[in-house]
Length: 219
Ligand code: B16
Ligand code: MG
Image 1 (spheres, helix red, strand yellow):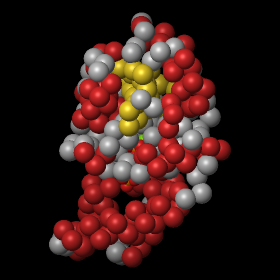
Image 2 (cartoon, rainbow, N blue to C red; image 1 turned 120 degrees about the vertical axis):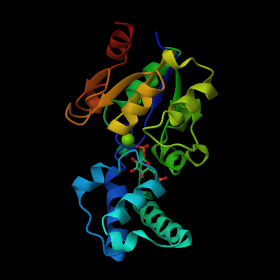
Image 3 (cartoon, rainbow, N blue to C red; image 1 turned 90 degrees about the horizontal axis):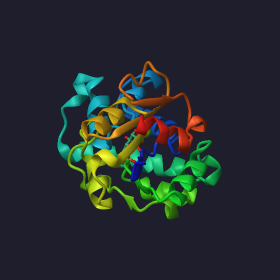
């Protein structure tokens, strides 16, 4: 059986995507950029500064500005986001996830969080899930965001597990690509159209069963 599970946060453990969207939308309005849910799909799994760059590209006139100004905008987005997630509770854990974490832990599988979010540890605290995790990747120390494999290899290295013994669980194509590039088994959560590269795919988190994942990994 695999020795480690590495979970994405947003879209897998909880649905922070809507709050990221609302926080960016507020900011986009301030900088005169039109921004919708469809475009937001492209930002899933993408780090804060990279997301800002993509949003600014929507209005080329605003895309060129000093780094300090970009940092101010990114900080403003994060302030919007923190206000929105302040009310997060364990009721916001996506269906089936706590069961999967519990079963994996009881089976001796190590568990890590591989999120691009600098707020990941805070969100896990709010969800009261921190105790399941042997390691949380610090997004601030990862140089190359998803689809680069660094987020996932950092987690495996910290756990001392070979990449081929790891299963990564992701809802974003950029994340699935990162897992595959690391030489890990990729479980995708979401529709087939968005996740063409997953080794094993389910439509939603409530279909994530420990024994199914192990079986597919071993096939
Ligand atoms: P922060 P994940 C990602 O989380 C989100 O999907 C993405 O929308 C967000 O921009 C990124 O984290 C950075 O988040 O601004 O909180 O550092 O899916 O990798 O868990
Ligand atoms: Mg995600």
